[in-house]
Image (cartoon, rainbow, N blue to C red; front, side, top):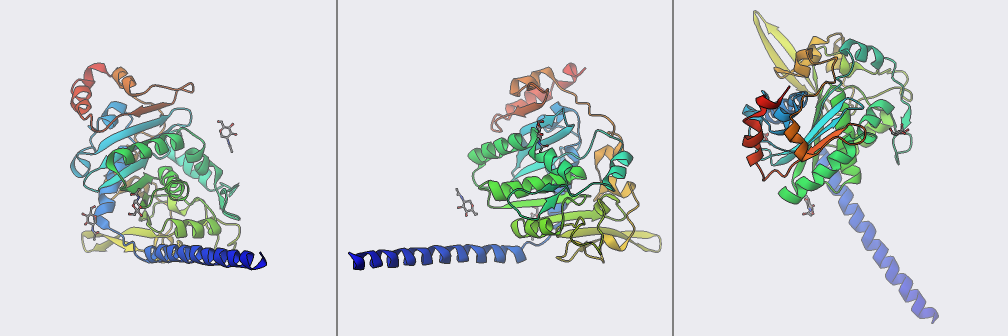
Length: 359
Ligand SMILES: *[C@@H]1O[C@H](CO)[C@@H](O)[C@H](O)[C@H]1NC(C)=O
Ligand SMILES: *[C@@H]1O[C@H](CO)[C@@H](O)[C@H](O)[C@H]1NC(C)=O
Ligand SMILES: *[C@@H]1O[C@H](CO)[C@@H](O)[C@H](O)[C@H]1NC(C)=O
């Protein structure tokens, strides 16, 4: 009896040994991945078009992918879900880009206030929320809740599930500009931590800081394939402020920054692209210049974001009544439109007569 029990324990010990070996193997794979992602310039210049398109307020144009940005580099994109949170003035879409072989998720930046007011407020944002299940990882509650506590998260998770059913196990590209970049980072992390998604990439443009050093470090371990593009003197990536001398109390960016900056040679201007170090706060990238420009916040890779600033100040949406066949407002007035991408007849049937229906 005594002997048999010991044998059992030995067996269990062997089993545990195998388990931890398997875990060790998986960790090794994560580490390998961590060093591998390289910045892809071509990909960034495509993804910025999606980050720009999501600012379009005409839901028909977005849903049928017929907007001005919905051609050229993003031609053929299949929108699966368009999510408009009217209560919080947020907008996002999920779709499939065949050329990238990826599900693309894009978040709109802030729309409700003047951009100047929004930036003024960013100076004072507190690190006031603990990221769940990550001890000591603090984040800004506003950015966190905009993704986690609105129509955004359930809408996006649902659409990702749907996309996977149709397209299989493809990679996911999450993007956004300005506050949309902050939401993209929280969404990417959520998909990596809570979803079964294997290959999640994030590329943001002019993104503010969203958490402290502990958060930045955990984020970069879990989401190694993340690039934060910053442009010239764009003020937003400098906010909320980073105080080098208060490492425990201050915001800190996660890596990797990619800084775009102009070099003047005689009468010519060249835009350079620098892939920065792993610290998240590379002193030779955007931190080497003063963050004092709103204009630099509005154009990335020559692409207007926020409609070049014209759209700020309104939360208005334009809808075609027939779109309501694809989903309608919920009790709070928020709208999720959902379609099956194989039914691409929709593109021509709604798109062709949309002008008759928009008031
Ligand atoms: C960069 O991205 C583009 C667009 O997705 C792709 O065609 C190209 O192969 C990528 N380059 C590398 C080196 O991965
Ligand atoms: C999330 O939203 C709900 C409803 O809008 C609200 O009651 C709740 O307090 C919010 N949670 C947090 C942490 O703010
Ligand atoms: C999805 O892809 C990943 C990596 O490419 C793989 O590890 C995983 O097993 C795949 N899942 C399914 C359900 O095919």
